[in-house]
Amino acid sequence: MGVPAQRLRGFGAQPRLLDRLASMSARRIEVCPDAVHLPGYLTLDAQRTLAERCRAIGTGPTGWYVPTVRGGGKMRVRMVCLGRHWNARTYRYEAVRSDHDGRPAPALPPDLAALASEMAAAAGMRLLPDVCILNCYGADGKMGLHQDKDEHPDTLAAGVPIVSVSIGDTAKFILGGLTRRDPTTMVLLASGDGFVFGGRSRLRYHGVAALLPGTGPPELEIEGRFNLTFRQGAA
Ligand SMILES: O=C(O)CCC(=O)C(=O)O
Ligand SMILES: [Mn+2]
Picture 1 (cartoon, protein in one colour):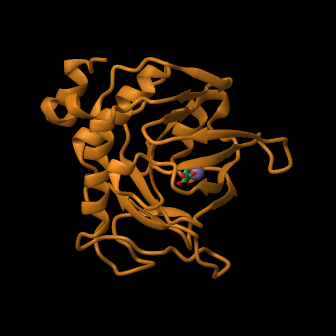
Picture 2: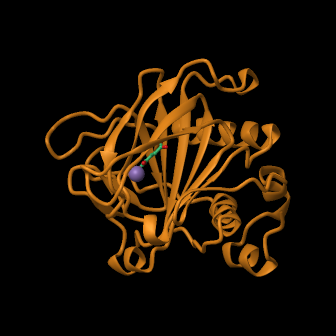
C-alpha cells in the first residue's frame, strides 16, 4: 500500500522506514458509519519496529508519566504526547508538559505521522496529524468512556479522523454513541490493528474496558499494550 510521494515530501518522511512499517493488508470493517477497523494492518515486522520506537520514546528523557485528571484521580495508563502535550488537568494542548515536568513535548516523528495519514486513507479519510498520544497499558490498564474533543473546533466540525494503532495485548475497545448513555459495542483491537473514527463517528464516546493479558505476539516482548492515537488540530 503506497503513500503518495507528495504526502511523504510534506512530512519530510523517510520512505524506507515507512515501507517497513506499512503492511499490505487491505481488510476494512466499517463498525459504524465512518468508524473503520483495519485488522492486521501492520506486519509483525512493522509491529516490532513500532514497539521498539514506543519503548525508546517512553524510556527517553521526556518519557512516560501517569497523568492526573481534573478531579485528582490518576489515569490507568502511562502516557507521552508527541508534537503537542495534552494537559490532563485542563484538557488543552500546550507546548510543554506543564502538568508534569515542564519539558517540551517531543516532536512527532514524520514517518509515524505519514503512517497515520496512510491508515486514514485506507479507511477512506484524510488526516495530517500534528499530535500523537502514546499510551502504555499495563495488564490492568483501562480507559474510561470519553470523547476526543479537545482538538480545534474546525477539525471536529470537519470530522477529521482520529487514527488509533494498537501494539501488544488485545484490548476490549468500547465504542458508544454521541451521548454517554447510548448503547455501546465492543471491538477487539489486536496487535497491528488500526481503528479510524472520523466524520459522523468523530465524537463517539469510546474507551478501553480491559486487556486480554498474554494475547500479544510473544516476539514483541510487551507485557500489556501500546496505543497511539494520531490527531489533527492540536496546534
Ligand atoms: O487505547 C485505546 O485504544 C484508546 C485510547 C484513547 O481513546 C485515547 O488515548 O484517547
Ligand atoms: Mn480517546
